[in-house]
Length: 367
Image (cartoon, rainbow, N blue to C red; front, top):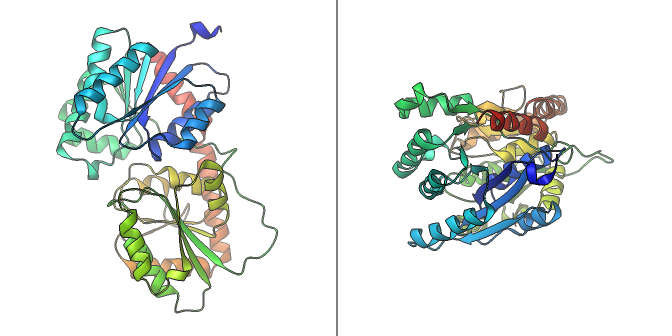
């Protein structure tokens, strides 16, 4: 198929490091036969992540970046609409629901269809975000939810969705050819624990650090590594500085994709201490690398972590429960191997980039 005959898709996503970028990159990588022309619009209060820019340049994807200024919604919307008019997409994949209003305005007057992809945890949604979800149900061609449970929650809150045939469940995907286990060549004397996420109020690093501090008076030789940045980074730094084991905690900040792979592969255990999730790409990446995983027992995490099979769940904000489960994994190599193998297998069978792409391609064909 000639490139000019391929459907043009504009992916609208957040400009800073986060789940949007990982999901969209996996979607592009899953299109191995280049069935679609991809274009990106990055929008947000953060400057464009260097990893995202490099990805677009490597894959020859046209992109625009719009830096949102606080309190100046309409000027930002104007720039966004200008970018859409220049790109002239056949389909808009809206990953950032903050732009639902100008997106509706655009496809109302132009020949384009919008597929809204809901990423924000329902438990963390503000009233305005529920309004955006409602508008997506009314006006968009299709709405993608990442899990069945997420879709059910939205149906309970937005009654009209019960009668809508627009919604579909498509799980996030990961490039399992890139994120994969490393071959161990030597036994490691230090047991490394890690977590990767945006640093904000929805991530419970306090409980993680409390549990780590309790463990370090025991016989285990542990290190805690935390990757990510965000508005809560200064507070996290204070927690580390106040800890009695601050010398064994390392904050890595934002890491690029190559560094993230090395980060996961250096760990013996991944912990995701979070208070609200939809479907964590960090957990998926850790699963693809074949790590044993501990995750808070909350909606979203339960979709990925089958307790005692693909990981172990622990009670949110309960440092003692987390301590006992870290010890359980650290002292049981057979359990570690069991959890890691099952996690990798689930990722390959249900969350590969290729599987994700095929589901989106089918959705586009029916939109």
